[in-house]
Structure formats: structure tokens, C-alpha cells
Length: 445
Image 1 (cartoon, one colour):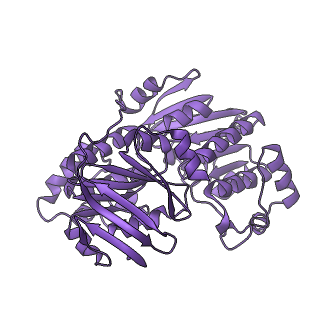
Image 2 (cartoon, helix red, strand yellow; image 1 turned 90 degrees about the vertical axis):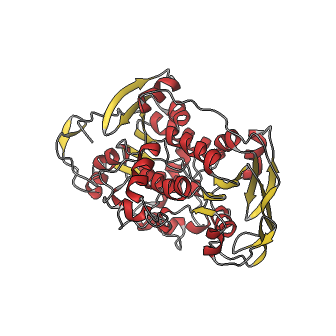
Image 3 (cartoon, one colour; image 1 turned 60 degrees about the vertical axis):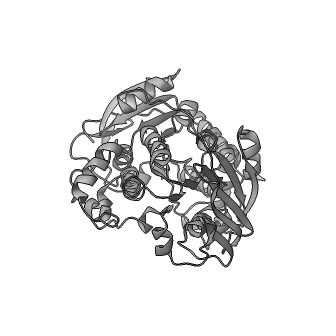
């Protein structure tokens, strides 16, 4: 973070955009008291303040709504509100004012991601928060929940609240924001007001216009991978096939078994029943290293399961690299624009997006797998890196790829075939031309 000026007014939604490592999370952490600035100052209502901790930030009326909810799964919503010191009647009244129904008697583990998020918003308002910092709030939401959240955010602004809306999705920022600030490499590039121009924002983020295009396989071959009547803990009766040259996407509202399905398809977890075939050979129940030997690469949703964060970037890369690793890492860094000061930097010190890039470099660019199985591989990636990811998939994956995504528009733009999963089962499958409304309906019924 280098000399950044940022301001947000009452009754305003201020979007914060930037590529991975641009400094968005650092800025939010400074505003919420997680970090203290080395230089510069923070003014609140014209008065200089030193925000020394998140607790102090809360006392100033600042709340953070992140992807990681401060809720106890085994408690009901009512119990969680009481635990946070929130008056129940006040919470219900606030919910009614902004159009949120609070399921007080439900346990948190029963809630959708969107419902958990709405509870956090009500908690913040009940604590008399005037500034809401929303860090990638749509990342885990279904299309319907995204639409509902953006509507709530606008209502918060109408109530006079100041909202900082961090997102890597330009269209969402354009839809909900009154102003947009773009950061690049720790510096402010510019501040933009309505009407927004998406191409101008892209150019500001990446020093050049990123060409967004639909990328589909030009020639689809025979079946190279298939799962028959697959069962897991949540997954049941799943039948999926992947053809040579194909990119298959699994869509579903968060929590419907997508992550377990990817783990089963990759061989990382063994199914309770059902069959998995690679090139017609039954590989059901074989150890994970056998799937790796056959050219399967797996990118799990939880990066910590694939990246040893206490090891250096180079040591993580060496998990799949046998020789010439320093030179190959340098090449991968250039191709994927991975931001790290030294190959010996601990992976934990990298931003979430750059950690994902290291995994892409190791498992995709370096290995050139036969089959790629990935859970939300573009989550947290900026537009430019997302383009590079799909180019890599088309160029280096020798057989085909199956991945779970959370964005319907991204899936429609990229996939050769889409499966929708609901309650652990395949609810529907689609081939081009895709109907977005039909897919979204299948996800939420």
C-alpha cells in the first residue's frame, strides 16, 4: 500500500476494484484495525482516528462483512445474536426495515451462505454501524442471492450508511456502486463515477484492455472419463462424463455437494459406492497417487489442502517439480504474473489470489495434466488471470477438464457442457446454446 487516498461518504456505495495483490484486502485491513499504517492518517467525520484493533473499529461504528462468518454453527440464529450482544427485537425490526427475514430458530449450519451473510448484516446494523466494509460479499452466493444482496446494499445506502464494496466482478461493482476506486500494485489508479465504462475500468486495472471472449473446445472427442451412480457422504446417484477436448462445469448453490463431488472425481476421496472410469478402465477406490500417475490434477476449494503455507513458494513448487525448478518458477511467475518478492518468500505471505496462481503454476502449467478436476479455480482471480487460466486449460490439459464454478455467466461463457447439482444429485444437464434463466432456475429449485 503506497500513498493511497480513499474516501466514502454517508449514503454511498463505493466499489473497490483491483487485480490480485493490488492491495484491496490490505486497505480493508487498515480501515478495520487489523493492521496499523506506517504513514498517513484516517479521518472519521473529519476527526483523525487511530484504529488500533477490530474491537476499536466496531466501537467507532465500523463493521466488516467478510466471507468468513463470525457465527457458531451449532447455535441457533437467536443464540448467535445474543452471543454478539444484539437485542433480538431490535434485530427483527432492522431486518424488516431492509427486507430481511431472520430465521431465529434455525441452527446456523442449516442456513444457506446468503442467509448467514444477511444475519451478519443485521448484526452490524444492530450495533449501530455506520460504515460497512464488505469484502468479496458475493463470492459464495447463488445468482438469486447475489441479486438479493445487491438490492440490500442499495437499501443500506438509502438508509445513510457508507458501504465499501470490494469485488473482482466488474459488472457487480458497476451495478451497485455510486463511485469506484481502482487499485493497482498498492497504488490508487483512479476514482470513477456514474455512468461507468467497463472497458475504462478494465484498462485501469490492467494497463490495457483485457479481451473477454467465449472459449470452447473446437473439436470434442470420445468419452475419456466417467462416473456412474456415484455416492459419497452428500453426493448421491451422480452420473457424469467428460469427453476429450471438453470443459465440463458443475454449477450449484454453495453447500450442495460440489466440493465432495470434485474430491470423488479426482480420486482424493473414495466413493461409498458407484464406479469411476478413466479411458474405459475402472479406477474406483484406487489410491490418490494412482490418479496422479494417470495424469489427473486436482485443485481443491480449500487452498490450504494443496498449498503448504509455511513453506516457501519455491518449496511448494518443488512438490511437483524435479529439476530446473528455480528457472521454471521464474517462467511461471512471468506467464501468470505471480506477485512474490522472492522464491523463498513464505506462501502464507501471498495474497489469496497469488496463492491460487502458485497452485495453477504447479498443478496446471508445470504438470500439463491429462484430466483437470478443480473446485472454484477462478475464485479470487482477477479478470486477466482468469483469461490466462482458461487459455492454459485449453492449451496444456491434454484430455479434458471438469470443474465447479459459482458464476452462471462464467459457466455459460466457458463450458462445453453444464451439470447442475442440487442436494447432492445432478438435477439437470445443459449443452449449448445455454439458457441462463433455465440454468439459474435449476440451481435454486
